Length: 217
Image (cartoon, helix red, strand yellow):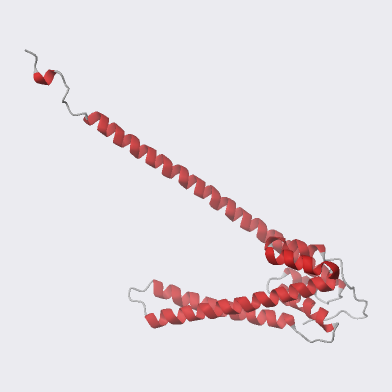
């Protein structure tokens, strides 16, 4: 008579269950590891692209503004290389185009005004919002004020952007008049090409021949 337990037919397969569980866990960990590596690589590529674009935009834009303002005999063309100051110079080059038609537009002052208004409202609103996020009992009124400040900052940013593109078009008109619309549309719909369009216009337009350098400050 055969022993019922000798056949092993009904013996529980604990070893196989444990092996399957370990194998499944290892596969899950491998999948998470691969996904993490892919995300890290994409993050590094994005970071490097942003750095490269920032350098390209800064150098090409600064070179262009420096050359254009130099052709117009501005006394301080090196302002093109200083952040914020180059925004002023950008607007003044556009104002120079308007001055040829008897207009006193002062685009540089307008650009800086809305830029600083945007920065001021955004910083205050962001700081207020951040302080509320760390509070265990946030004040609803303070959150609404922070939201309002951020919305106002966004409105100022829109106005600044509109003024910026108006100035950009005027610069294209004063340098490459026949291609001004083309350069403007390219800059508008393909922003990455905007510094290149400015660079292509750096040696064009009307150079000034005056006895004294033109002081814009």
